[in-house]
Length: 462
Image (cartoon, rainbow, N blue to C red; front, side, top):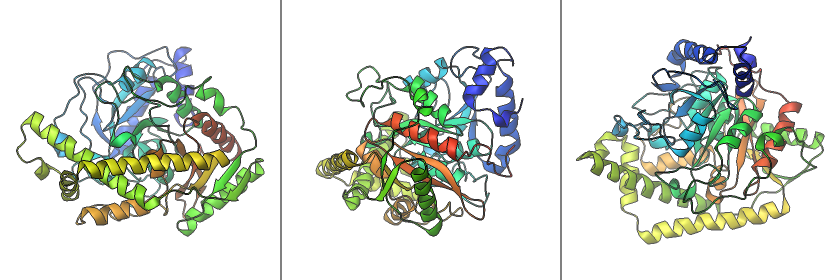
């Protein structure tokens, strides 16, 4: 059977029916990591072999890479792309880790992420840059850059990821794969913590097929014990939504960015209209500068607190010396902010929730480019030699429309519907109201059927 033609659900079906050995796909994934990772630098931790592999469950025997932040596993490293965390080993599984394990996944390792997951390019100085399999001189995006590169190159059908400003969707856009960010609270961060980046952080996946993403959300979603909030309860399954075409949708569209990104949105608009949806120019009315300032403030306070807490626990006298200079400056910025500053930033997030709620009272879907530019050459988005404000401005300008979905808590996805004349993928962004992941999956399934992308592979692919 052809590994490249199978998504994760198809692999698991073969394992459950006994048509392949429980470790069949694990062995193939490991061989591909060995063959392709020297070029991609997508995988930075390799876990020990498991003693046995699942033969039951929706993802029985399916290999999975976890991002190097966000989902702790007992006795496994999780270093967040930084030498500050280089000897951190988790003492227990997170709730997400437990749910993924119970679904049948076989954990193989962790993927490359920029230091502290604070960039839209994966070019940390500790592990070095991850590379885009469509063009090894370009970034695969960030902060889930290694994860997206691994899926695009055919190492495995899906990877676990996280998204605090666009970190699932931006790499998916640059690597020509599918990435959905769920609603705030849909997937739990427990039991050790409740939220990350003021509630803007979310956990999910990057995949080649839409149905894999939906099926994973089916097994991971749901409040953890003691979670203080969550989105509306899902009726039915996300997987069922993929095969259920949506009704005729009212779509508001924003066309911006470079020529290729604009062309991608216009092509997606034409496809949506062909499928029976109504598309018109209409962007949500929220204070974009306020959301940008709020994100910078909340991230600064969070990384400052996290850095100092870790330093205290590990008795590190000068933790900033172990960080990249731009992130050390970000910590200092956070330590100079007041409680009033932080509360004002949180209020800006809440204001964006109100604005997006009003928008989605009029429109079912918001269509835009995922990024404002095609995947740039390595170095363009790197923080090396930059102060934090200049670095952050480049970061924000690269994908100025994704973070409002983190700020507001609404779900959004990047769909691979366009490639440039040079063969570089360009993602198209679709957002929906809080709790409306099923609508996004329904639309994504329809788009995937109308304009399939699964067999579009970079030359580097295995």
